Every structure is written in C-alpha cells, then in structure tokens.
Length: 224
Image (tube, rainbow, N blue to C red; front, side, top):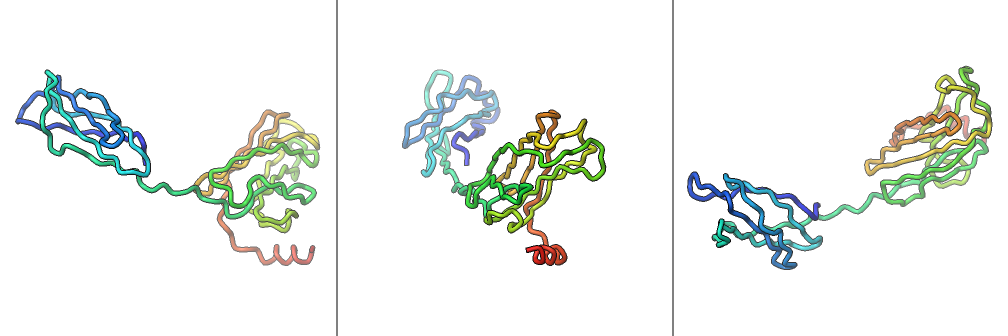
C-alpha cells in the first residue's frame, strides 16, 4: 500500500568480510528513479527507502559499490514491488442526524457519503436545565433514516447530559456545538460543546441495529 516503502537487507560476501565503505543503490528500471548510494554497515546491513508508482509493477536494479566506486555483481540483482489493490472508501448506508425538539430531522450526513465523515452544527437548548435538579436532562437523540420527520426514522441512541454534570444552570436557548464523527469501522462519536459552560461531553455510540421493542412500537403506532 505504501508508495515510499522502507526496505532492509544484508550483503553477504566472504566469511568475516568487512563492508565498511561499501554502498548499495536501487534504480527503478522504468522511471529511472535512483535511491542514491546507501552506505553499508561493517556487517553488510543496510536500510533504504524506495519510491514506487501506483498501478504498476516496480522493478529495481541493485548495484553494489566498493570503497573505490567499483561495482560488484550481486545475486539477486533486482527486486520487484507492486502496490496492492486499494479498497474504495465505504459508503454510509443511511443518512444520520439529530432529532430536534420540534420533530425536525437535522441531517449531519447524507446516505452514500464516503467514510470517514465529520460534521459540526450549532444548536440551541430547548428548555432550562437547572444544575443538580433531578430529572433535568439535556438530550441529543441520534437518528438514521431518510424521512424529514425525526420520529419516522430509527433512533440509534441518545446522548443524555444529566444536570448533575453541569457547573451552573443552562438557560433555554443556550448555544451548543454538536459534532458527529464516523470512522471507517462505522464507530460513531458524538461530542457536545457548551460555550457558556466551556464544557465538552463526548460519547461513543454503536451503529449496530438492535431488536425493536414491541411496546415502543405499539406506542409509536397508536400515537401516529
């Protein structure tokens, strides 16, 4: 996968031979790129960084030089390096966003977007959150789906911030910055930053589908 692979090796000659002052060079036979002469250690060990082209077989000629610059025949006298097939970025299977208090679905990511993804949006607290008041919760429901009404989409999880975590009251209408991140393994991270309190809350959310709750489905059906 690497276009600048590091390689290492060892030149072996006569038993006990000292390779101090010797050097080795790699030349791409197609592009004529050269590594330059790389000094060997006394025991013949070397490290080199090659430059290779994508979508092609890269063949390098190996040359060995002694202290005077004379060349020696080496076996093998070449090496090949081919970059493996690169997997295209994985698409997001469903749109993902946040359910707002008025049942509006605020999309952060559109279906089909290539992973990884990151988006930040400014939101407002719907009601007063009183510090330490039991039952006062600041919720960020994460949903996925394509319907414009939030409750018609699947609830993935809810980031809930208990009032006990706050240093002081959070008035209704206070600004919050919500950031969603999804990596290549489909791990979702939700972070909420509250400028008024200079506080950030971060949670990791699983995107795995869970078995539906029959009671919740019945209640949802009767409500609609």
